[in-house]
Image (cartoon, rainbow, N blue to C red):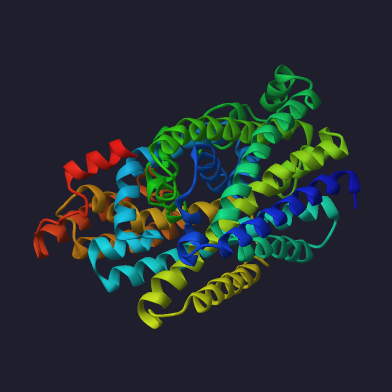
Length: 494
């Protein structure tokens, strides 16, 4: 083991552990365990809100899978990845104040809480919980696989042993600390990611002999590597444009991102997060994906592309600095997997168990069940991650697309269209999920249907289903808990 590399990572993990202990002590003083454990008491300021969105969205897909795909495909993947820059801005712009105010009036702690109160349907709640559990297991597996790859590259442990180490590190502090621990460690992790990606990009450019030499080497190997179309010309303009539905517009519907929009302190915090989040996401995404492409001439022939970041860091940086820089992808994966764990746990505990199994459970019982469910979910994900796919980014993107196809219109139109009802929501979710899985399977076997990403057609079909069933079965106006005038006053007060 290279202790020069491992020591900074170990120090980082110790700091995270103590943040979890601090959060646990603060949570012990709370009068509402559920709100504190799953939403951090709705206390997030602008910087913390921005960084927790960035760190949650910037995952193993961004830090290992994305650079791995860029290493394999070329600069075309960098262009495609940069469609994510406005993600945080878009989420808070669309959901933002109205979602936070309505969620507070509903006393909603999870996205499903909002859907339950908005549509007043047990079927919507159960289908929503199942969708979150099924698709987020795929997303969580991607993070655990990425964490295992990183630790394996640094320590020489077997993949399974490295996966076990990562699982233990994540579970300890998520179980004891809850959402507040996640949010504050996300802030630390976001700062590490911001600086770490810049240092590594500079190191790769120097090792490659400068930008001119790197581009010449890429051109000599395959001219398509420096075009927008990818190494084999598969990234068409239509596909890249449609990809923005997946990583731009559709991100509004991701439960792990949407829940951030109900956890901030006030409007000033949200406005600050809009700016910080957009700048940080753009900076980190550009750096990480450029590193993936520029590493190709420096370290040709990497067998597992997802390992390009740890391998190139060990190649071009001093040991202690490589350890510090590699805290960035580790931070990304830990912050994402902890958020997803809490989200799936809240779906099981808050949205199913407390609603339909034991609604009058005591404080201590809820606390034990929440922590127990989180631990069990972590063990299940560990088992799912034992046999990793070739490129983990596509596992993560599959989960993203499924969640977006299920939730985008029940969330957005549920907020902004008074005629939306449970019939439209159910039809939209079923249509989106079924069509997405079918088209994803078709694309895997035959290539992109109509040349667009698998999520595009399901999003369109689910919109048609939502509007059609809402109007045809029972057309009636929904009275929001906050009138237009009261909403405007609440926004001004906040």
